[in-house]
Length: 448
Image (cartoon, rainbow, N blue to C red; front, side, top):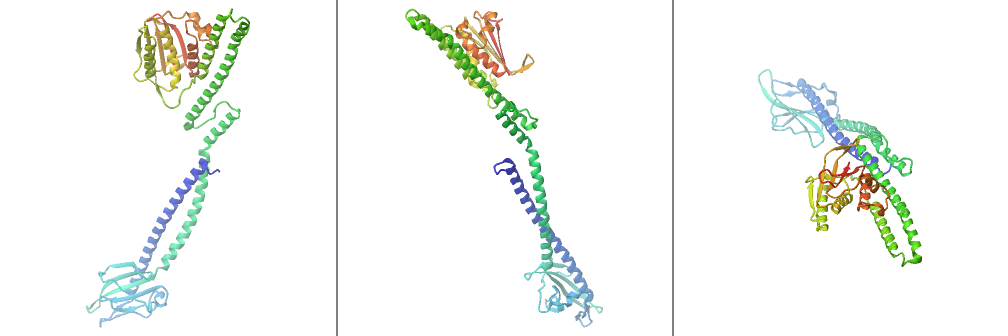
């Protein structure tokens, strides 16, 4: 697994989260176990206090006596870790167990009779105090404080044993969970590896598209990559076709010029004509090769703004005609295409309309689903003029691929061929027919 890989990053992130979680769990469980052990010890010390109470006897003289042998043998063994003490209310020590020789504790002065006080002393011992008022058979009362203390080593050992067991189990559980996490990561990232393998296959020529069974989240990515691949292939094919057409189109003019070099003065007009023709051919092929024909996956362009800019420019170019632009376009018509391509399509169509109109050019755009030929189209752009129009028999010729410039009639040549190819690259439809409202030409552009 590579350090820069997504799997490594996710695995490290999951490992850090698990480590932090287990550390927190360990602290919480250890603290809970310590409190539970202390509570158990407190209850145990209470039993020892009750044992001392049952063994003590208050004589008629007012003296408290304890038997030689106590129920708990540890009280009689020095250094056993369990110690017992009895104090009077004035904190005077009146008895200590044989195990507590040389030791002493100071009970709290705030302890009320009948109550317990459990605490951990500075000497590292858990101590339980119990205040009691004792009354003998003759009615004499005495107040005593019974104290039982035990070394904290018992609790510490129990906590240490629990900590060791807990860490072993948490470590084992962490290893198992990391293995499970690694397995889940490999399974979850399998679609990404699949799409990477398919891209490598496309790069090596074994595939032409991403056609795997990808997850829902990757379907959009695969679609966009396929669109990009198609666009690049279309560009390459268009460049090749443009170069081939350019070379083929220039053969005839070059042959004519070669023949005219022997008598240049006689064939001067022919030379000019062929030079003009070659210039138009080069212009046409360059325009067609430069067209992008891309459907953008991100970002939008306002078609209405483009139409208004073009109409404003054309009004200045054809100011002598005083053209009336009848525009029925949406105020905001956002489309996902390259701005330059839209300028080519709308600009060429509107320029031709202005060139051949008498007085009026009508432009309309609709951004609704327009169904045509079993396909849905999102944009319909229509440009009409009141000029002479184009005969129906000539429409197919001026839109035919590879038509030479001198074969185009009424000026609808280079620009219309570029429009036709661009619309085709988009997967759209270009239609031309007579305008019913104006009587001239009507071009309809359907874009997906």
